[in-house]
Length: 385
Image (tube, rainbow, N blue to C red):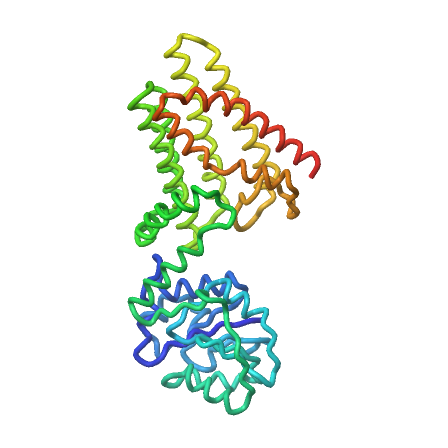
């Protein structure tokens, strides 16, 4: 069992109540530790306000309150540092013998002796430093560390702002498309940093994003020129704001299966509505019916592709992100990688450009064929997988 002890030093007890990215430091430490498979315990002096807000099972005000029944490693955290989930997972895998301790320049990793008498020092003034000095006498120090940006200083307001920036920066996924990474993400992260300080939930953001996208589709159906450009820009705004729900969910540990399902189907509903709107406007403007068939083909291909992905991958996931790839297999061949690339939303920028030149009909022709071909590829991946 791995236990994380967070030890506020004298005059730093209030530090745990400071907020970083919408969560109190104690809430963030609690979630980081639990997600890393650790059992967090906060060493608090006396029975103050914090000991009433933090879950009782995670508070120790005396040595007898400590969970010393464990057999394994413990991590003792300097009160002015915040380790990321990745950092704590790294610590849990670090080998350390019973005759040594690891000093990571912000936390200590070691095997406590039977009875955990070393940890009694945590309840004195400057408990972290007292424990470190004690271990230095009886155990061999071994230097180690988490990667840069994974053990974050949080003592000052400047530190906390820098830590928040790094936490949000870590939300950018390696699998994102070029435009998403370099255009949408900077905007969505800017918005999310403000939203994190409010009570708005990820699911509420998803609903707002979907409504914006549907309004954009309605504008596109009204005619070329101003309306289609406005609709295309709203479609792009939908895509940008849609990134905020996942960012808020991950940064505030509010991810849920319902949220993943809402996000996935909200996106596909908007895409289908935009395709149909383009076909409807084209049909009304020309008095022809074939644009409606093209729109119907694009809608059908979109919803069929979404259904294949949903039942192939998302129904199998019980925890964590529901949608990470078009294939549920951990091994990704060339076809799967190409399909993952094509499933990205960089096509939205093409919608905006073609709307400016009154040629969304070109896009619909490509989408009607492309969406059906894409659905066929997904079916092939599912049959083979």
